[in-house]
Amino acid sequence: MTSPIAYVSRAADDEEATWIDTLAKAMPNEKIVSIRQMTDAERQAAEVAIVANPDPADIARLPGLTWIHSLWAGVERIVSELGPTAPPIVRLTDPELARVMGEAVLAWTYYLHRDMPAYRQQQQKKVWRDLEYRHPKDVTVGLVGLGLLGTESAKRLRGAGFDVMGWSRSLKELEGVATLSGEDGLRELLEKSDIVVCLVPLTSETRGLINAGRLQRMKAGASIINFARGAVIVADDLLASLESGHLAHAVLDVFEKEPLDEGSAFWSHPSVTVLPHISAPTDRSSSAAIVAQNIRNWRRTGELPTTVDMQKGY
Image 1 (cartoon, one colour):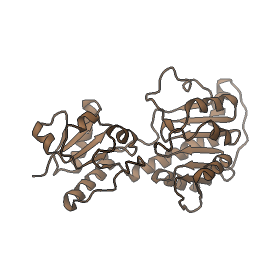
Image 2: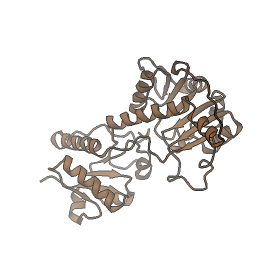
Image 3: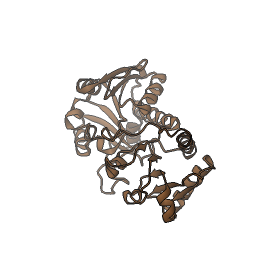
Image 4: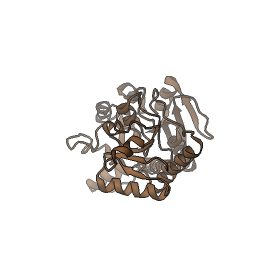
């Protein structure tokens, strides 16, 4: 009989039960048990944990873990909390997640490209005035991050006719996209882009990546979208840039503290659109299928899927 699989999260019981049910349907030959309901013997025997924002104390109660499969693409929190001695961690790599993120990047790029914030403000002032139309080919969108999400977003934007640039830690090649890397590359992207989209993982190198100096390098009147992590952009520096009028608008889906504090200046700022971390929600069915396949492969071959580089943080 195979060892039980521990499900570890900080979610409410009903949400956890829904996930366990979805995962169980995807792998009917496995026994998946919430750590809250595991016996001592089951906790000792568990070799795999499927996790969603797990409490490190719960992971410590599973001494026989061979590896951990996260249900999220972003793993900076689990990497930080579990530390370098943690078992190997596999993050979720889901093409459906990339599709949804590409959809969101295109949607909110259109939001800025078609001057939706300005029309909203005109409505509030009862102003009837059309604004000059810009063709997508005349709008440069700069993607900061060219992983799976950035690559899919670039394809969507190119398909819509936008001029696309992309920056990544190591130089990549994408058809129809001007790709850059390094400090000089990031400077060039910020200076040339009308809309900058942040899609990098949060690591020690990307924390505070978009700061006052880099915001100042952006075009006057440019806008920014953050679909990465809140800490990638220095919040006070962004507010200062918006207040000065250097940047026109910011679409923010992620924040250092979530839910966003009610006292945050972002809520009421006329040049900020606040979203409740909805740019790329995890699809339970597709995620469960991917996790199930990874576990089946491991049971059969003993080989782990690609694991997180604990030094890089992704």
